Image 1 (cartoon, rainbow, N blue to C red):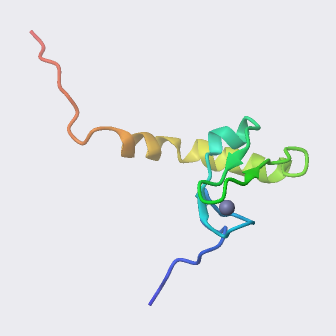
Image 2: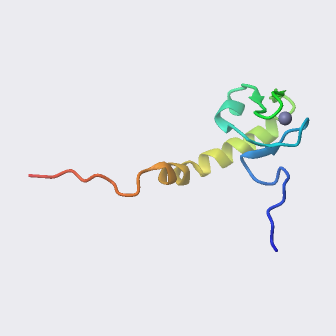
Length: 85
Ligand SMILES: [Zn+2]
């Protein structure tokens, strides 16, 4: 069976270094330098922007590239149509 690997290979998800719980990575927050809080154990993950500049740059690129897909996924299936007269 092909199971997704429970590690940090999936963009947008990271394992908590303390309890191992998979955390959704709030990319917008990370990019703006805010800490990630583990919902399971309360650990605060502070991303060091200086140390992770390269990773953050890649993340930012990925975030921008996937933005249209995310917007499409978030959009309602049936788009409301305006009646024109
Ligand atoms: Zn945790």
